[in-house]
Amino acid sequence: MPDVLKAPLVVEFPFTRSLGPVQSAFLTGLRERVVLGVRTTDGRTLVPPVEYDPVTAEEIRDLVEVAPTGTVTTWAWNHAPRRGQPLDTPFAWVLVRLDGADTALLHALDAPGPDAVRTGMRVRVRWAAERSGAITDIACFEPYDGEPAQPGGYRGDFADPVTGIVAPARLDYTYTPGRAQTAHLDALAERRIVGERCPSCRKVYVPPRGACPTCGVATSERVEVGPRGTVTTFCIVNIKARGLDIEVPYVYAHIALDGADLALHGRIGGIPYDRVRMGLRVEPVWTEGARHPDHYRPTGEPDADYDTYRELL
Image 1 (spheres, rainbow, N blue to C red):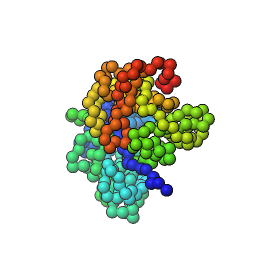
Image 2: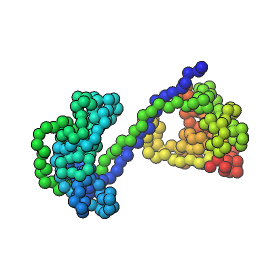
Image 3: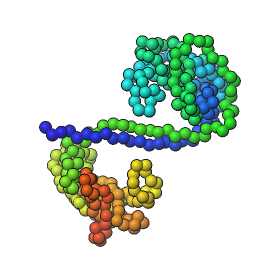
Image 4: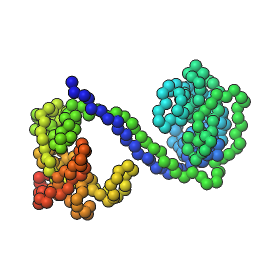
């Protein structure tokens, strides 16, 4: 049996967002070692605070400080912390209802083991040594057997408030291509482009998916396509991607390879970005040792007639 192909894959996007007055005050408060909640019209105090009452949908902005001590309402043990989590040793995820709050805050509890954690146990905030106005300013919770802490009466008025945050979203996983795409990748290593034909509609899909997305039937007949093709649509990229050593602006396009019934995407090179157009005939450019084309360049042929690729837009 041939080896199963697999590779680590990371999808990452740093999401930048602005903050409204409630979230701004909450995060600025954490920077100043103050925990703020928001009080609803019926007297409940919500921590973490929200801008609209989850029951009535009414806008709420009445900020009130709560204590950095509280009670565990429920918990789960994390025996294998992952990258980016609050602690790098095993810990408990806990919901903590801080003294003065009516809802619970999710965070980590530093405890020696699951036997040391229980619902109803008392805990307090352990503040991070360096704080910037983020939920990570609470380093974690820790067990606490003292008296409840007393709030200082802050109402959300701080100098130099936090107005925006960057929330990194990242997904790490192992990708296994399966039979159809493994054959496609093996062919690319030989500088060939292979798809599969649907036995029902006879369309050729590149890259192959193992089944026809239109008919829903399995595909197995391999068909070599290209290597030349036609630009169907394209976009001009003006923002440089992190980790990608390509100068902007450059063009990314959908390319209908000759003999294929599905356009794949690739970068266009060898031509000024403002001269790329629909119908441009292109061919792949390979670099030594690469498992896929580095980019596509013009072939010098006349542009393809629109009717030959309009169904692939």
